[in-house]
Length: 220
Image (cartoon, rainbow, N blue to C red; front, side, top):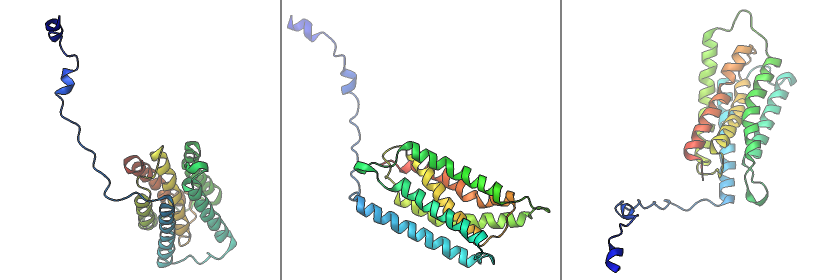
């Protein structure tokens, strides 16, 4: 009887032939505590804001910046950008992050709201704005957005427990919205095409880059 049992093939013998799994490397350093991460995020927000203000000042502020017609909308957009970042980053009850639906709503509402505001506040220039002015503002937008986007990607790596691509996209669009304030502080063109595409570029780029960064390195 025992000899017959020994003749039965082992059904999991092929598993024993597999090489052992690679050992996971321990993190190079300890993870940040929640207060430390919040301080780091606040420092990054202030640094990004300082960069936007500095770049706008170096480009030259528009002559009518002090008028209510210009200053009030820019102030409102700046406040909305800050409140949106607060909503996206501030922990909820029990330390949980903002819900995925709220994050998705932010990621979608920011570009749609900006485009709607551009349609309401802008006009179609006649004659059209020269291509050189479009390209000049696009270059300015990219240079202004570089530092805030890099800071956000650095600070928020391995920070998202769920939906990292959506969370990255939402934060990217909000950073881009802050960059828009800096752009319109020195660019007085109100042509619809120029505002929608040249000034709106940081919002679109922020959404795409934020989604990619969140998907690749955002999950905690």
